Picture (cartoon, rainbow, N blue to C red):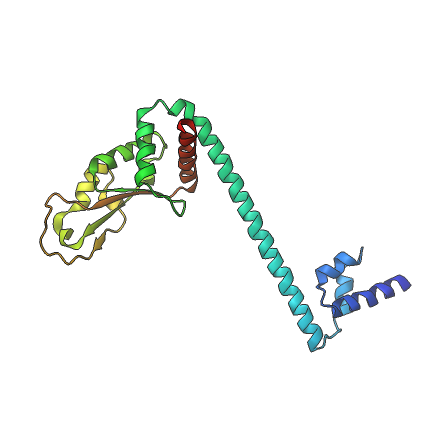
Length: 223
């Protein structure tokens, strides 16, 4: 009984210091939460004690956020390192494949490099065809995961460029993203064969990391 009274007095002192229920339970061993709640149910903190408790809770919350963010970053980097390692291990069987080398070179030059997004943009239909083949045969991306976006000057709006790029990519226009028309001061079409820029999008972060792993491995092999 005396021990419980000592624990009760200690719990109240800890509460005055701004300790949370969780912290008090960690400090006082074998104390049921229901018992602690009963002890502190009618115990009122003054303004200064309330302020101290609030500051302590904010500190604990901030520390938890920092720890959570650090853990997420660490796990993310571990996953990136693993994917890079696996990608490099694939190079011996890929390096002799001309399609692989052409595709990785084109992506290195013209592909997306930020936001961990797989993107390739070009106005040359031949390069778009090569990259479509590369994504399908080397990266094993199914056609329904390839999203097409067209960027073109507004004066070419009636040229039916979507149909042109649909024939190039063999992706139906119905699966295209919304076409972006760029404003221009020019009113005359100087290039009648111009069909805008075609961008291939693949929403796959791990594929982006695999591609960067391949690039790193190719660089290490030749340099």
